[in-house]
Image 1 (cartoon, rainbow, N blue to C red):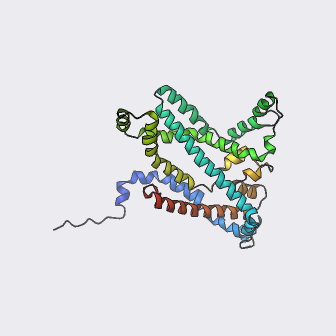
Image 2: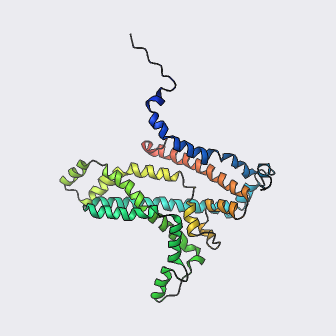
Image 3: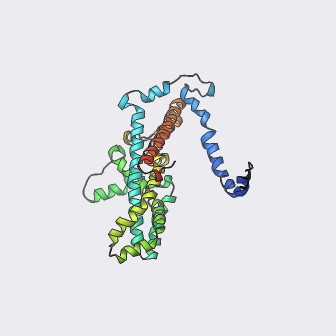
Length: 312
């Protein structure tokens, strides 16, 4: 006779893995406090908010959304969505390319001391606050005393007012973001490279493969799963901008908003500057729904192309 299948009791799994369950507590508390408890505030997107009445403010239906979407291709939400997605695409593509390049180059350097010093120096900007980054950027591009204008005038050219020319700021913002995340991202890819079996490289070396061929046919293909996973996770937040980056570098400079305004900065201005809770909540709700749909679509595409790299 076959042995009777032992029936699982409700808390058997918890008793066996209680340490892991306790480690989940901070994450659960975080999501409860900052993601689930504020959800009733979505109701503000459908009211003409009045600070004296609060949740009893008069219901206005989709009027806040009509304001955001009115104008078609010239609407506020179109400009915000376009800026947010284009900036994040640049952050993801240029950032990952730079991180992979640096990780591969560091792997090919055999002087450990140089590699450690380089990694430390590249990692340092990741820990610098955006407030400090904003001060650094201002001191570089300030019209009167900025380093950039000092160099321009030293070369015999007239000063250039960066803070009145919005077309230069996309490149500046992308460069700052890539520079700040370069060290952290390259360490992640470096860890993936170090996990590759060294005997594969040795076999390729014996067969006469050059450094470039070993990178092209071994390192880069084996980095593909890591790159796809990191890009997938980044695409999940593609509609969520880096508020602290844009706010600390650009602030509320109205001359630059056409090229630098994203959904997060618009929500902040709606709440803290214009005091329009309804429009801010409507923009935030749109951002969440759009991001959810985008994650599902991207994951479905990856499931079709490369199922083993899909999130679910």
